[in-house]
Length: 297
Figure 1: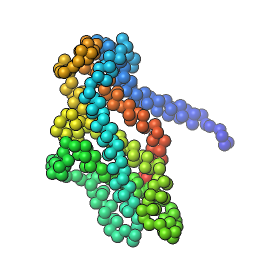
Figure 2: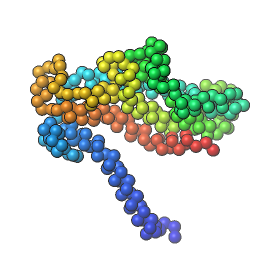
Figure 3: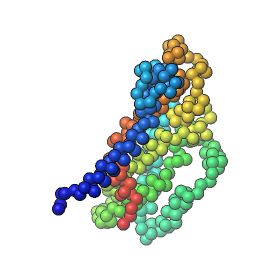
Figure 4: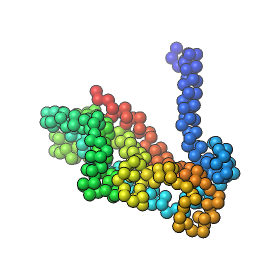
């Protein structure tokens, strides 16, 4: 009968929810461990006594991080990169996806251009040609080196063009009858109707820029120009609190209360906060955008 649930279905739901809860805990464990280490005494962290709860609770590592200019310089560069890179990438993605979403008769050569885009997913020129191209354009060691090379994300273009192709053709035809041109149709009709997939693409772009560290190390000549993730990579690999130079008396006093492990954990946790603040507002569009933009009827 409708509304009744079989015993096997109940067992399946219990197993399914339990399994998903276990996976969630496994994903949260490293994050909680980093937070606990960052709030623990240096001796407890060094002895490996910290698991999911701080041992000998202290904010010393965070106080030390807040006094370090290098961290906030790198944070500012990353924020600039995310804002500029996401805006630029979304603009070129929309401008590329709209014409590619048209039929061959409306845009002659559309199929050829689409395959050129797909080709770049499968093959690339390699690291050295990529670096030499950026160097020859004169943008090396600048913010533009971090945002221009990856401005056109082909996967995002494909996602968006498939969504555009799924919109009713009658909307576009009615707009043409009323005298609208392609620019008006794109910005007044297609964009407002594409909120789920645009939010998804924006999330991909923001997270990609925020988490990227390799290009910062390769393209920046000075560590002072590193974005946050590049800075953290050098911190995690090389940092030792005994090698700090040019520290003031307050920082010198804090050095006796912290270790390189607790400071690393504090900086890593602080670097995740901006994404944690942004993601909940876009998460509700995430699955809808993926599904709607990945299937063309």
